[in-house]
Length: 502
Ligand code: SAH
Image 1 (spheres, protein in one colour):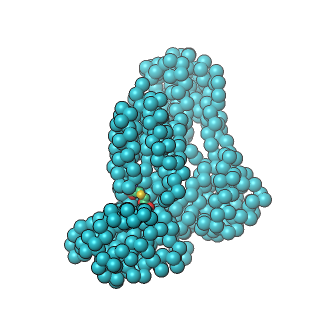
Image 2 (image 1 turned 30 degrees about the vertical axis):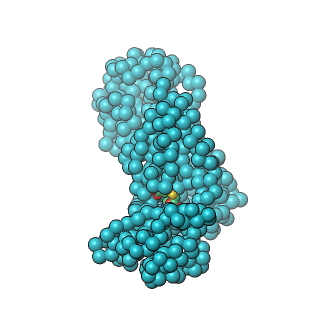
Image 3 (image 1 turned 60 degrees about the horizontal axis):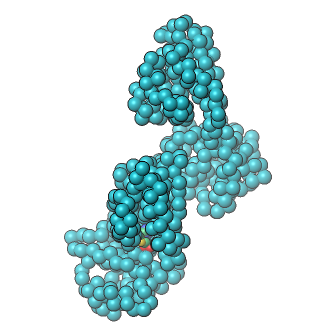
């Protein structure tokens, strides 16, 4: 077993600004070592057994010293693990990726580097500032602002050259030294009225940009209380921000919206909110609990040759079934004589990953639609196996049993995720949320069950958006004030309500 390390650039923060290759590394890793600037939501893409190690760096106050980070990475790789070292922006732009690579080389550990979009370019872009422009800047320079006190670094940086070259200057890690930077540039001849932008948390929903001049920027940064992580941009390209600022003009920019979920799938609502510039705070209200030591499932798998049909109605059902199959030393060939039916595209994708093309996938993602297909082809001699959720409806079993033998085996159940209570309360108490959305009655009921009646008044600070009359009614019965209800009961309808709420 040989381990391997991927030094992956996580991009500047916006969730979708990660490379396909970076995502692949995250999905295939045994260990992810990540820092503060890498968007934490990427961890949700990892394997369920993946280990996460936070080595967060806050400027000048490292949570873990670099030597320890190096050691964690190489130790894990030596254990034979696939390690992703996830770093904000690009690993080789002031990310100490070079040093980490050197150590791995020295220790004989195989590694690859996956470049990322650096904040030094992508961050400017989201602030409406093109780093070069034919009329304003014909070069750009990315400089560390992490200046040493001893003047050594000051002399390493050629202030005179920087002040006199007609290119865009981008300082990283520089906010604590903003005064020094602006003074040095002015001293060496850069005009005092050169435009400057400070971009805080670039590309994220909480991006904040202020513009000023070299002469005044320091004062303004104090007034606006600008903290790291911030990019300092010096040059005429800053003037283009008024015209090119697309990100902050998005309809949901800077809106913080809680999305309550009752399914274990990526939420369409969340994704749409992010695309519109908003911050979606996902709160899943349920979790999946696998039934342990499932001898019933084991028995049926051992007798799988007796069956003619296998029905899997969810991604979880597929995962658990195939895990058990391989645990018992079988593989998909054991299913060669079965007709396989699945419901839903996620389920279909999941089974295709196992090299199986399902025989039947009904157009609609419901049991009724599957039964419509089965009712004409099932024969009395058939035998159907349905391994799945304890909470699912009896519909399929009832209907199929009228035609032939059917066996349902519970492999998991969905339960309320009470572990989320503290996290939810913290979010509600943070005073950083504008809206909470409920897309079904069960999401309201689950939510109230988890946080408990006595915390309900915390919702008064937020605007509650309901998808339609049934959900609104449920909320009212639970003493929740619905601020607005969507005209059409769809995800887009809810989004429209928020966009139009001025
Ligand atoms: N490798 C990273 C840079 C690491 S150095 C990259 O390529 O982007 C850390 C500095 O990068 C921070 O102090 C800040 O100046 C800058 N930075 C990184 N991400 C940022 C973001 N989203 N917004 C503003 N500045 C950011």
